[in-house]
Each structure stands twice: as C-alpha cells, then as structure tokens.
Length: 125
Image 1 (cartoon, rainbow, N blue to C red):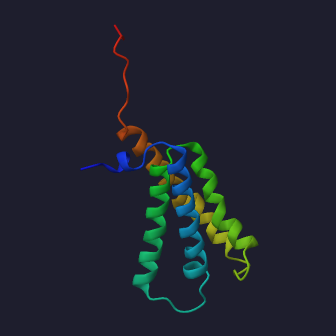
Image 2: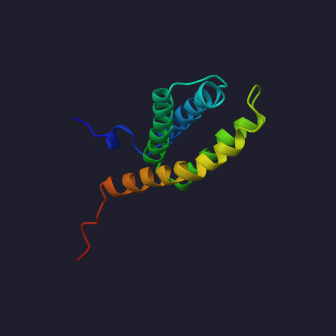
Image 3: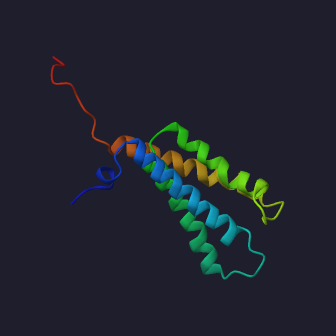
C-alpha cells in the first residue's frame, strides 16, 4: 500500500496538478457556493466550508513550498475581477484566506515536511 506522500512526490508535475486542482475547486466554490444569493440549507453550508478547509490543507500538503501561499490570493482576486460575482464578496474571501486558509496551508506544509522521510548521510561519523 502506498502512502499519500508516495502518491504526491515533490516534482514539478505534482505541483502543477495540485495548483490546477486548487484553482478549479476554488473557482467552482466561489461561483457555486459563495456567490449564491439564495437560501442554502445549513448542512450544505457546513460541507461547503469543510470542503474548502480540506482543499487548503491538501494544497499545503501536496505542495510543501512557501509559494503555496500565493494561491491564497486567487479567490479574492476572482471575486474582484471575475464576471458575475457580487462586488462585495472579496472582503469575506480575504478574511477567509487569512484565517482559516493560511493556517491550514501552513499545517499541511508542516505535516508534509515532518512526515517526509529525511535522508541522512552514511558518512556522518
């Protein structure tokens, strides 16, 4: 059985796939969930926010680099520049990217760096 770390090696292709998955999910999330003006049942709100939290953690875990934090600028920029998005949606999105978005990315990054096996030189003595 392979671990999640073995399935997401630290390669450029993995970073591109994870970045595109993050951008696609957050685009669907902003347009389909955050931008709605209709009544949404509480359980759907819970799962929508939980899904966004898991995606932020997963992005930090799959892309264990500091550049991952640049992805957090995408949802607020989409809310400002995207067609058909409420003009005031960018404010709560900025707040959500600061907390809990950034700490979840940091948690995923930290966990990946601590679970990844460290290579030790054999000639240390």
